[in-house]
Length: 113
Image (cartoon, rainbow, N blue to C red):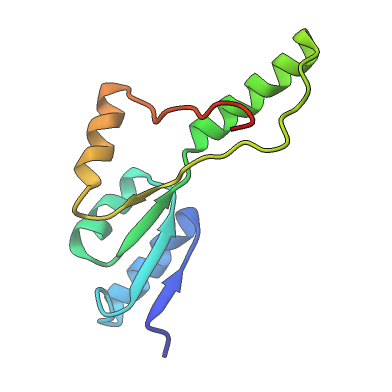
């Protein structure tokens, strides 16, 4: 039996329920992606070990910014744009909540950095 699982986005919710129903919650390390309200209890209970927060808002914002710069100002597309994902665990979940409530977004990286 697997001791670790990786499940992306909202697909983690049925996996969390299944782990709970089979008594495996907290025994199997479940890694997810992104962060949404329904995940919170599973992080706090230890069903989800960690989630990789990929900053989807920033990804969309940066894509639009790069496209507008290219179309309006003839700026070349950067060869790459880096984003540093956050790792959300029960121990730091409150920080991500505080950032959301305060309207704080993680820094947008410099284009081409």
